[in-house]
Length: 203
Image (tube, rainbow, N blue to C red; front, side, top):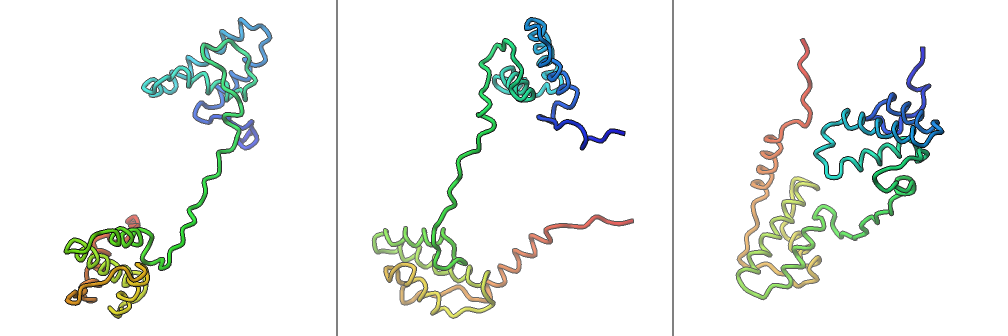
């Protein structure tokens, strides 16, 4: 018995082993005219195997590109399209730099720091006071979500001043959302989400 693990690696598994064998055979044909006929026949079969490819722009060129890839760019035929260069598919992509942004308090996140920076730019007035109050309550909510079940409001005030370099202050009559209300909302959200994975019923 022959196992798939003992067979030649499929270059593009979607086309199956028979297509790959046809391509290998085409590469071994010495007569160029005959090789061209075989290549065109293989591309036609590939298109019939995946009719949805016809809905893709330039689908015929994609099929010819796949043909060359399956042959590992060894097939020498007269393609109606430019033969792709092998290094297009073998070269490694450029490394994506990991964002190296320092966050002073990770439980608040970068977005909240950006909101603080935006609030600093606003002119003094009710809109700015309203935004600063919203930010303070968001900080309290985030603190309770990730740290513990209680928090001193003065701590939030101090950290708001720290994150804004003492440029943002709450109004004297500002009142924080109650800790119990925030915890209750958080718990209700968790209940509505329910368990992430539900097991199958066993009979």
